[in-house]
Structure formats: structure tokens, C-alpha cells
Amino acid sequence: MAVDDDPRPLWRRIADTLRAEVKAGDWKPGARLPGEYALAERFGVNRHTLRQAIEHLEGQGVLRAEQGRGIFVPDPPLDYALGKRARFSETIERSRRVGARDQVSVHNVRATPEIAQALSVPTETPLLRLDARALVDGKPAGIGSHYFPAARFPRLGDAWRAERSVTAALRRCGVNDYSRRWTRVSAALITASDARLLEVGRGRAVLVTEAINIDPDGVPIEYGHSRWLSDAMTFVVE
Image (cartoon, rainbow, N blue to C red; front, side, top):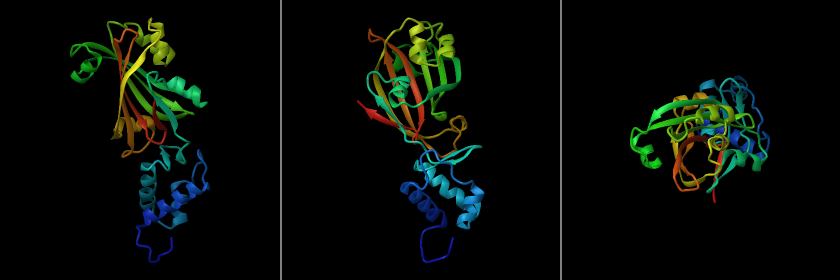
């Protein structure tokens, strides 16, 4: 990159150039950019400077660096409606995107004071914790952790492994419908373990949702805690 009177640091100038190219359509959604070596050579900088620019754009959702795969322009974020019937599977169907869940697991845990209050159960109540990674169009989008009273749903773990859908697993256990009592949305920095699962670097911001679902009688049946990549999901409040 030529030396001139531009006061911006080199990494910022690279970031601004790449952002402008994405905005102009030079790099379409889903497109893979040249590798770090090629980009560093293009701008005449070392890889450390190039990475500063990429990390800055990744934090803004302009680019997405996937471990072992490369640097991409993110696909348009998925609109996720936060209403009384918030369902990942139904959101995927409406958007005509391809959704899936993997890294499915089941754990026996005890209710912390916060989760116990949300589920209206005593602290230390046995719970089933169901975890899974959510994929949109084959790419990691978020991680969901779901907590259920173990005494009420003793077979929920097996249903979860088979269905990989909260709605379908609950239906197997006799709950044919449920609704959302409330959802709380916040932002946080991604944890090291979530970064590995979502195949992104540390320092990324994630959108965090906490939610309570209730059965038709108004009894809390699920506390959910999900972490979503901010460039993969947009929340729409109904």
C-alpha cells in the first residue's frame, strides 16, 4: 500500500477498502475472499496488520473468518421473530433457508438460583440440560442450551437426540403446544468454548437470548439460554 498523507493506520485503511468493496458488490454474500497471504501481498503489509483489519470487519459483521476455511462475506442474517410462538424450525421454514442442529448432547444438572426462579422450582432441582449447535445453510449460527424439569420429562433426552428439535421432542413427551412467556436479549463477548464450536475467533460479539416457555396451563417447562452470532441472526419483536 503506497505511503501518503492519509492519517489512518494501515489496518484501518485496509478495512475501509474491503468494506467499500463489499458494499459495492465486488464481494457477494457467501463469497470467499483470497487468503491472508494473498490479501497481505495485495496491500503490501504483513499478516499481523492484515489480521487487524479482518478482525475489525468481523466484529462489525462485514466479514466472517471461519477457522480452517477462510474469510467470507456473510449471508444475509436470518430474521428470528420473538413472539409467543418463537420456533427455530418454523423460522427456517418461513425464510426458505436450510436449518439443522448438530453437536447434540444431554446433561443432568441442578437448578441454579437464577434458573430455579425462572422455572418456578426450588434451587438444586434436578434438570435436563439439552445442548445443540444451530446451523443455517450449513454454517454455524448459534448454540442453544435448554433446561427442563427432569421429573416431568424423564424421556426428553432420548427424544432430543432423535428429533434434534425442542418442539418435536416435547411432542413426543406429551406437550403438543407451548408458548413464550418472555425473552430477554443482551450482548456479550463470545467464550472460548463457544468460539470453537461456532468456528470463529475470540473477541466476537454474540447476541444472547434468555427465554421461558410455558405449557397451555401456564406452567414453565423450559428455560433457554442461546448465543447467536450477530451476523447470522436479526431479532424481530412481534
